[in-house]
Amino acid sequence: MLEPLRFSTYHGGAREEGLLDFSASLNPYEPEWLGEMFERAGEISNRYPYYESLERELEALVGEPLTVTAGITEALYLLGILTFARGGFKKAIIPRHTYGEYERVARLFGAEVVRGPNEPGELAGLVEDESVVFFCNPNNPDGRFYRVKELKPLLDAVEEENALLVLDEAFIDFVRRPESPEGDKIVKLRTFTKSYGLPGIRVGYVVGFKGAFRSVRMPWGIGSAGAAFLEFLLRDGFEHLRRTMPLIWREKERLERALGVGSDANFFVKRVGDAKRFVEAMKERGILVRDCGSFGLHEFVRFSVRKPEENEVLIEAFREVENVFEQERGNYRKSFR
Image (cartoon, rainbow, N blue to C red; front, side, top):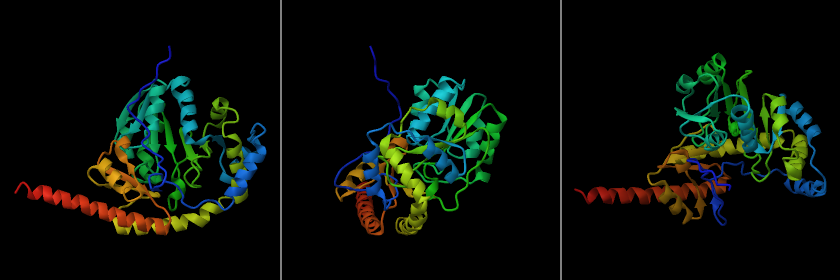
């Protein structure tokens, strides 16, 4: 009676015990109040987690009207309901190399998917009436961040048409001197999963169209752990970010120099050739990096910034595996001389 849905996109992440995990792009520093927060979650888990008052306090802290959601993933599904299922939007415009959940949600709600360039000026040429444009900024997996002036062609195209721009700003906290555009045809998606290093606690928020998003979200969606997290976050007032981001930026610069990579976020992509084989070689050395095949980048791996001693292990292993691969390529070339 009920058949599974099949999609061309998939989430390429993995969880493997016993490995130093560089595949997930998270803040490696835990909040100092983490233990207390879990105690609080236990205390309130015998009641329904109503969080409207916490939501109002978060609005005051952030300085924008918002809707709390169970991470960006829930927000994307709510967006699908509001746009493709109920709002009359027909088409999803998505960059070729980006987060795969945009396409999955669009297809789930019956939208036509159009793939385009990752560059916003070129993507703007695809915008038309009744379209939703998904744009990750900074982009996952390459970490490129586009400033407002660089986004202007895309912003103008959306403004001129009956279109909507969805800005996924999941990693914006890792950007030095971030900026974000304003507009009445923009939805911004943000999350605490990355910047607080707690992907198991599903809390994020949507900026824009507050009444619409609140009308379709699930009740009690963030659970007692999410409600407890918000309580402590509000007390923290983003102090954890102010304390840890400079540590991450310093290590980011070290990885850039050591491995010849660059990014505006807390992660990098690097071309390695056979990405699947490279990932396995790194596993043999106790390290997990991300195969970027799910992003359509089959010769690339993605890895994040962690603590100094962990990054040192990554650098050493990365160089060792690259040297092995280079020697193999040299031997292969010699065999045809």
